[in-house]
Image 1 (cartoon, rainbow, N blue to C red):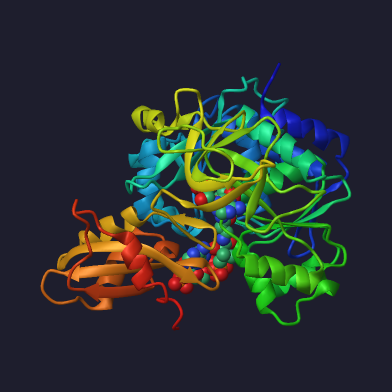
Image 2 (cartoon, rainbow, N blue to C red):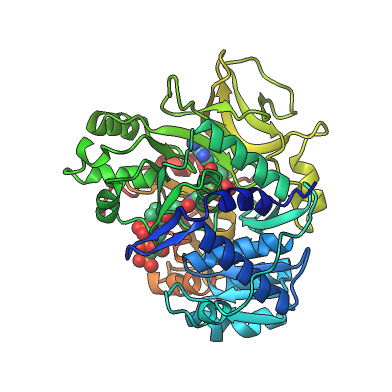
Length: 505
Ligand code: MLC
Ligand code: AMP
């Protein structure tokens, strides 16, 4: 049997070809039949450019329907989609392209001149510009092509997507996700969250991460639900668009920002049946305020790039704030000590997961992959949790040195690597501090070789190397970093000392 996840979508698209699939900010509608055709045309374009089964297609483009059709076109060919955050600098993109070795690279027209030679040096046959404009030249040209017939036959374990996640060592790792991984998650969530053709999903997430691309789109595709597709999260626009919508998925910052508007109320949510939140901890305070203000209880769920969705609060039945809910059907979750021994219920330890949703490994990093899996196939998430007697998982922290800011993962090691290379900086430590809007904000503590450097010098080095969402907005100079007897920087002490770094403007 063909396990291509596009086959799963195609069956739904064919049954509902006249149904509205996407509605964009300007009110334009694309039907499921039209999306099916456009993805087939993108597949024909990719095929003519030489792409086939197993070829990587890397993509750093703005959010648009064409970008989704490109993704689906890649799946249809059995090729491998490699999405990249649009905020990445050319320096970061160079690393990803050299690692993924794509045959084709799609980028924003404004970045084409800067990225073409980087793509060629990484072995890409072509660097192709694709914009988010309705009159994009490539999309117009593709509109004349005949769509490919059918969908390439692949096995469940065949690679569909490589998604880069930063690493605690500072080196990003390409998580390899198969057609089976994507399909199992999409089917489970579609049922668990009760999606139906009548649903209208409000989509304001980026589409280069699992949240916006898989969790939101795949789940809606399987019911041929309508997707209101917005370029980004703008609270005023969301308030307008909530009317008529039934489901929204977002990171905690979405909910914090909605609540920041005193006029946001139950009336805005009259047609909504479900607000889903994840990618970072939602504060109990916001969860309670949201219920008081709107009458709606946010459904929290827990996941990660390497395993898609792992657990979810129930659609029906009690939803517990701060809990990731129950393991998805077919997914095993356990809480263990450092050696992988399962702990009694109620004790906190590292969350481990096994199931059809779990990735096969990091591209080209067999040893690293082996270190993160137990011998019995459980993946060590690096998150710390507790499971209650009923099997509800509460996420209480992380063993990995990771900052989550507005739903984006930021690895301190990567930033420290850039700071430590600046002449005049002796060493640095990067930590996350509580941030009212983003959950956590990045703080850098620096030690100078002689005198502290002007902020501009630090900023220039950051601008060149790192996407702006990773930049520390607080730079603090210290005479030395606190270290333990083993010489390890005591980050817990720094986190405590600078816990209020973002309380002042
Ligand atoms: C933007 N900026 C951020 C930021 N987003 N800084 C820190 N953290 C962030 N998350 C900075 C920009 O660099 C820019 O800086 C300034 O903020 C304004 O940029 P913007 O694009 O206008 O920002 P805004 O629209 O306000 O975006 C904030 C946001 C967005 C929270 C709405 O970041 C977002 O949509 N986050 C969702 C991320 C996501 O989808 N995560 C899922 C990962 S998957 P300057 O200085 O240039 O002005 C995953 C698994 C799972 O985690 O379980 O789901
Ligand atoms: P990413 O690597 O970008 O996929 O981010 C995954 C990480 O986000 C997880 O390992 C968790 O640390 C965090 N995360 C996801 N969902 C939740 C949640 N509901 N509560 C707390 N943290 C979460």
